[in-house]
Length: 262
Image (tube, rainbow, N blue to C red):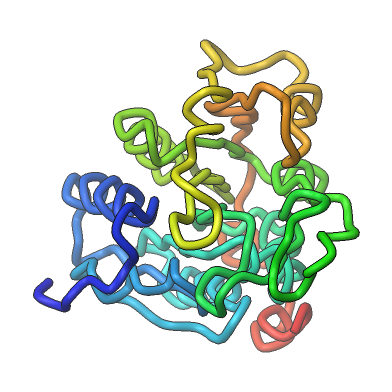
Protein backbone atom coordinates (compact mmCIF):
# COMPACT_ATOMS: atom_id res chain seq x y z
CA UNK A 1 0.00 0.00 0.00
CA UNK A 2 1.08 3.57 -0.57
CA UNK A 3 0.04 4.91 2.83
CA UNK A 4 3.03 6.81 4.35
CA UNK A 5 4.54 4.90 7.25
CA UNK A 6 4.58 6.93 10.46
CA UNK A 7 6.29 4.54 12.89
CA UNK A 8 9.39 5.87 14.59
CA UNK A 9 12.71 4.95 12.95
CA UNK A 10 14.00 1.76 14.52
CA UNK A 11 10.57 0.62 15.76
CA UNK A 12 10.10 -3.14 16.01
CA UNK A 13 6.76 -2.80 14.27
CA UNK A 14 8.57 -2.64 10.93
CA UNK A 15 9.76 -6.21 11.45
CA UNK A 16 6.29 -7.43 12.44
CA UNK A 17 4.81 -5.71 9.41
CA UNK A 18 7.33 -7.34 7.05
CA UNK A 19 6.99 -10.79 8.62
CA UNK A 20 3.19 -10.60 8.46
CA UNK A 21 3.28 -9.52 4.82
CA UNK A 22 5.63 -12.38 3.92
CA UNK A 23 3.30 -14.90 5.59
CA UNK A 24 0.14 -13.42 4.04
CA UNK A 25 1.73 -13.47 0.57
CA UNK A 26 1.73 -17.28 0.80
CA UNK A 27 -1.99 -17.31 1.60
CA UNK A 28 -5.13 -16.60 -0.39
CA UNK A 29 -5.34 -12.90 0.42
CA UNK A 30 -8.99 -12.75 -0.54
CA UNK A 31 -9.63 -15.01 2.46
CA UNK A 32 -7.51 -13.08 4.97
CA UNK A 33 -8.88 -10.53 7.43
CA UNK A 34 -6.92 -8.61 10.04
CA UNK A 35 -7.99 -6.51 13.00
CA UNK A 36 -6.21 -4.08 15.29
CA UNK A 37 -6.96 -2.01 18.36
CA UNK A 38 -5.60 1.38 19.35
CA UNK A 39 -1.87 2.01 19.70
CA UNK A 40 1.30 2.04 17.62
CA UNK A 41 0.67 -1.58 16.62
CA UNK A 42 -2.65 -0.66 14.98
CA UNK A 43 -1.06 1.26 12.12
CA UNK A 44 -0.24 -2.10 10.54
CA UNK A 45 -3.84 -1.99 9.25
CA UNK A 46 -2.80 0.89 6.95
CA UNK A 47 0.21 -0.96 5.56
CA UNK A 48 -1.15 -4.43 4.76
CA UNK A 49 -3.45 -4.62 1.75
CA UNK A 50 -6.07 -7.13 2.93
CA UNK A 51 -9.54 -6.93 4.46
CA UNK A 52 -9.16 -5.15 7.78
CA UNK A 53 -11.02 -3.57 10.69
CA UNK A 54 -9.91 -1.06 13.30
CA UNK A 55 -11.44 -1.90 16.68
CA UNK A 56 -11.73 0.18 19.82
CA UNK A 57 -8.94 0.18 22.39
CA UNK A 58 -8.53 -3.39 23.62
CA UNK A 59 -11.10 -4.81 21.19
CA UNK A 60 -9.24 -6.32 18.20
CA UNK A 61 -9.75 -9.83 19.62
CA UNK A 62 -13.57 -9.83 19.92
CA UNK A 63 -13.81 -8.23 16.48
CA UNK A 64 -11.65 -11.06 15.12
CA UNK A 65 -13.84 -13.62 16.91
CA UNK A 66 -16.94 -12.07 15.34
CA UNK A 67 -15.43 -12.09 11.85
CA UNK A 68 -14.45 -15.75 12.18
CA UNK A 69 -17.94 -16.68 13.42
CA UNK A 70 -19.55 -14.82 10.52
CA UNK A 71 -17.27 -16.42 7.92
CA UNK A 72 -15.34 -19.48 9.15
CA UNK A 73 -13.60 -19.74 5.76
CA UNK A 74 -11.48 -16.68 6.55
CA UNK A 75 -8.03 -16.72 8.14
CA UNK A 76 -8.27 -14.03 10.81
CA UNK A 77 -5.34 -12.32 12.53
CA UNK A 78 -5.74 -9.87 15.41
CA UNK A 79 -2.83 -7.48 15.95
CA UNK A 80 -2.70 -5.94 19.41
CA UNK A 81 -0.36 -4.15 21.80
CA UNK A 82 0.43 -5.16 25.37
CA UNK A 83 -1.58 -2.24 26.74
CA UNK A 84 -4.34 -2.98 24.26
CA UNK A 85 -4.87 -6.64 25.20
CA UNK A 86 -3.29 -6.98 28.64
CA UNK A 87 -4.95 -3.88 30.11
CA UNK A 88 -8.15 -2.67 28.40
CA UNK A 89 -8.85 -5.90 26.55
CA UNK A 90 -7.57 -8.66 28.82
CA UNK A 91 -11.01 -10.17 29.39
CA UNK A 92 -11.50 -10.52 25.63
CA UNK A 93 -8.13 -12.24 25.28
CA UNK A 94 -8.92 -14.70 28.06
CA UNK A 95 -12.35 -15.61 26.71
CA UNK A 96 -11.11 -16.08 23.12
CA UNK A 97 -8.39 -18.43 24.38
CA UNK A 98 -10.86 -20.28 26.62
CA UNK A 99 -13.29 -20.81 23.74
CA UNK A 100 -10.49 -21.84 21.37
CA UNK A 101 -11.64 -19.38 18.74
CA UNK A 102 -9.83 -20.16 15.48
CA UNK A 103 -7.93 -16.89 15.23
CA UNK A 104 -4.30 -15.81 15.55
CA UNK A 105 -3.46 -13.07 18.04
CA UNK A 106 -0.16 -11.25 17.48
CA UNK A 107 0.84 -9.28 20.57
CA UNK A 108 3.23 -6.38 19.88
CA UNK A 109 5.05 -6.46 23.22
CA UNK A 110 6.98 -3.27 23.98
CA UNK A 111 5.92 -3.09 27.65
CA UNK A 112 4.55 0.46 27.62
CA UNK A 113 1.75 2.62 26.23
CA UNK A 114 3.99 4.16 23.56
CA UNK A 115 1.46 6.02 21.41
CA UNK A 116 0.26 8.09 24.37
CA UNK A 117 3.87 8.95 25.23
CA UNK A 118 4.95 6.37 27.79
CA UNK A 119 2.73 5.05 30.54
CA UNK A 120 3.26 1.68 32.20
CA UNK A 121 1.22 -1.34 31.12
CA UNK A 122 0.46 -4.65 32.80
CA UNK A 123 3.71 -6.10 31.44
CA UNK A 124 6.03 -3.17 32.22
CA UNK A 125 8.95 -4.02 34.52
CA UNK A 126 8.57 -3.19 38.20
CA UNK A 127 10.21 0.18 38.82
CA UNK A 128 9.64 1.34 35.23
CA UNK A 129 9.79 5.15 35.14
CA UNK A 130 6.98 6.55 33.02
CA UNK A 131 4.58 9.48 32.81
CA UNK A 132 2.07 7.50 34.86
CA UNK A 133 4.69 6.16 37.28
CA UNK A 134 7.27 8.94 37.82
CA UNK A 135 8.51 7.19 40.99
CA UNK A 136 8.62 3.81 39.27
CA UNK A 137 5.97 1.23 38.42
CA UNK A 138 4.84 -0.25 41.77
CA UNK A 139 3.35 -3.39 40.22
CA UNK A 140 4.82 -6.78 39.32
CA UNK A 141 4.65 -7.40 35.55
CA UNK A 142 2.06 -9.77 34.13
CA UNK A 143 3.30 -12.82 32.21
CA UNK A 144 1.25 -12.83 29.01
CA UNK A 145 2.11 -16.43 28.15
CA UNK A 146 0.93 -17.65 31.56
CA UNK A 147 -2.36 -15.81 31.13
CA UNK A 148 -3.31 -17.45 27.83
CA UNK A 149 -1.94 -20.82 29.02
CA UNK A 150 -4.21 -20.70 32.07
CA UNK A 151 -7.13 -19.81 29.79
CA UNK A 152 -6.51 -22.91 27.67
CA UNK A 153 -4.87 -21.54 24.51
CA UNK A 154 -3.84 -24.36 22.18
CA UNK A 155 -0.88 -22.61 20.50
CA UNK A 156 1.45 -20.33 22.45
CA UNK A 157 4.68 -18.88 21.10
CA UNK A 158 7.13 -16.04 21.52
CA UNK A 159 9.43 -14.39 18.99
CA UNK A 160 11.55 -11.24 18.70
CA UNK A 161 11.68 -8.54 16.05
CA UNK A 162 15.47 -8.85 15.95
CA UNK A 163 15.10 -12.42 14.63
CA UNK A 164 13.23 -11.94 11.36
CA UNK A 165 13.46 -15.51 10.07
CA UNK A 166 12.31 -16.89 13.41
CA UNK A 167 9.49 -14.35 13.59
CA UNK A 168 8.20 -15.17 10.12
CA UNK A 169 8.38 -18.93 10.70
CA UNK A 170 6.59 -18.58 14.04
CA UNK A 171 3.79 -16.46 12.57
CA UNK A 172 3.33 -18.91 9.72
CA UNK A 173 3.08 -21.85 12.10
CA UNK A 174 0.58 -19.96 14.25
CA UNK A 175 -1.67 -19.11 11.30
CA UNK A 176 -1.67 -22.75 10.13
CA UNK A 177 -2.65 -24.01 13.60
CA UNK A 178 -6.32 -24.92 13.98
CA UNK A 179 -7.68 -23.10 16.99
CA UNK A 180 -6.61 -20.14 19.12
CA UNK A 181 -3.00 -19.13 18.44
CA UNK A 182 -1.10 -16.57 20.50
CA UNK A 183 2.24 -15.12 19.41
CA UNK A 184 3.97 -12.64 21.67
CA UNK A 185 6.50 -10.57 19.72
CA UNK A 186 9.13 -8.80 21.80
CA UNK A 187 10.05 -5.46 20.29
CA UNK A 188 12.07 -2.44 21.23
CA UNK A 189 10.47 0.98 21.56
CA UNK A 190 13.19 3.41 20.44
CA UNK A 191 11.22 6.41 21.67
CA UNK A 192 10.87 5.28 25.28
CA UNK A 193 12.88 2.12 25.92
CA UNK A 194 16.04 2.13 23.85
CA UNK A 195 17.23 -0.14 21.04
CA UNK A 196 16.47 -3.54 22.51
CA UNK A 197 20.03 -4.63 23.22
CA UNK A 198 18.83 -6.63 26.24
CA UNK A 199 16.70 -8.78 23.96
CA UNK A 200 19.64 -9.42 21.63
CA UNK A 201 21.77 -10.50 24.58
CA UNK A 202 19.23 -12.50 26.59
CA UNK A 203 16.95 -14.26 24.09
CA UNK A 204 17.60 -17.82 23.01
CA UNK A 205 15.68 -20.22 20.77
CA UNK A 206 14.17 -23.39 22.16
CA UNK A 207 14.99 -26.38 19.97
CA UNK A 208 11.73 -28.23 20.53
CA UNK A 209 8.45 -28.13 22.41
CA UNK A 210 9.21 -28.09 26.14
CA UNK A 211 7.95 -30.95 28.28
CA UNK A 212 6.98 -28.44 30.93
CA UNK A 213 5.76 -25.35 29.02
CA UNK A 214 4.72 -23.45 32.15
CA UNK A 215 8.22 -23.77 33.61
CA UNK A 216 9.69 -22.29 30.44
CA UNK A 217 7.10 -19.51 30.41
CA UNK A 218 8.10 -18.57 33.94
CA UNK A 219 11.81 -18.48 33.06
CA UNK A 220 11.48 -14.79 32.25
CA UNK A 221 9.31 -12.64 34.53
CA UNK A 222 9.24 -9.57 32.22
CA UNK A 223 11.71 -7.82 34.48
CA UNK A 224 15.49 -7.84 34.09
CA UNK A 225 18.32 -10.31 34.42
CA UNK A 226 16.85 -13.57 33.15
CA UNK A 227 17.34 -15.46 29.91
CA UNK A 228 14.36 -15.15 27.57
CA UNK A 229 13.17 -18.25 25.68
CA UNK A 230 11.82 -17.90 22.14
CA UNK A 231 9.83 -20.47 20.20
CA UNK A 232 6.66 -22.52 20.50
CA UNK A 233 5.78 -23.34 24.11
CA UNK A 234 2.55 -25.24 23.48
CA UNK A 235 0.86 -26.80 20.46
CA UNK A 236 -2.35 -28.70 21.06
CA UNK A 237 -5.17 -29.25 18.58
CA UNK A 238 -8.71 -29.56 19.82
CA UNK A 239 -12.20 -28.74 18.69
CA UNK A 240 -12.55 -25.06 17.82
CA UNK A 241 -15.29 -22.73 18.99
CA UNK A 242 -16.58 -22.35 15.42
CA UNK A 243 -16.84 -26.12 15.01
CA UNK A 244 -18.72 -26.43 18.28
CA UNK A 245 -21.12 -23.69 17.24
CA UNK A 246 -21.71 -25.32 13.84
CA UNK A 247 -22.55 -28.70 15.32
CA UNK A 248 -24.89 -27.12 17.85
CA UNK A 249 -22.98 -28.28 20.90
CA UNK A 250 -22.80 -24.70 22.08
CA UNK A 251 -26.11 -22.99 21.47
CA UNK A 252 -25.12 -19.51 22.52
CA UNK A 253 -26.40 -16.18 21.28
CA UNK A 254 -23.62 -14.62 19.16
CA UNK A 255 -24.28 -11.13 20.54
CA UNK A 256 -23.90 -12.51 24.06
CA UNK A 257 -20.57 -14.04 23.04
CA UNK A 258 -19.19 -10.79 21.70
CA UNK A 259 -20.45 -8.76 24.66
CA UNK A 260 -19.68 -11.22 27.45
CA UNK A 261 -16.34 -9.67 28.32
CA UNK A 262 -17.06 -6.05 27.43
